[in-house]
Image (cartoon, rainbow, N blue to C red; front, side, top):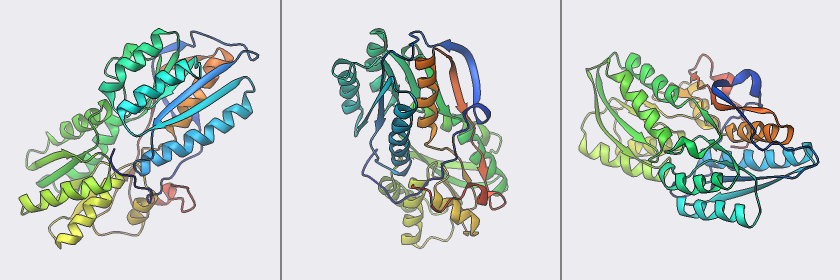
Length: 330
């Protein structure tokens, strides 16, 4: 995910698992139900805080670890962070062999490189909940918890199509090559097929990182003489995009839309920033939802939905105050 970027702040709503989540698919029983007296050892494997959203994931994982161990005396939670897909693959093997986990909650660094290692863990009898970045083979998981990646791509595309009046030049920045990034991109381009006069000049990966996004946007500004709008698809990347635009002194770019509800960007929307007029929610607190749902299933022997989707919402000046929390930790 590139170099760490810790400056962005994210708004996290309190967990309201039952009312706020969209549950789809079959219900999966926790195959290995445990009595309260038995030991549940949950490994939580997540990317390191390489950008603001990932920093939020780390925060919520550590916070929820403490909450679960207090709530359930019979559970032990081990949280591990990784700076690469290879490191994460090694870590989950260690979690199984050294920590003797029987439950794994994993937010994969990348989809393809983690699929086989996770499948191997599952085949050893470990209950697996995958979060956010799905695996390329869903048989490697027991449950999946994610934000609504289709909506995360669809909502900004609909907004841009309307705001641009159905015409103009647009550039996009994608995240990391993952299933969720593909879902977002497919949804985004699917909407814009209905606006043939909006031309997507280019779309490159910028790894959800502001420094990489700065370089990608510099390239776009050099190659394209007129850019009307930018879908940065992430608030950290939007920081780099805006920096490049300001440095180049370009005035043709009228709209920049990021995503995830970073505190700084919600504030820009609230304050009427001339080019940041909207955002889309995608809270990193989903790792906490996944850990709590999984713990309930494992400790209580409760049923867990095969798929849990957390909705995304368009943030505009009219509703931005609902999503702005200045004291939030990220």
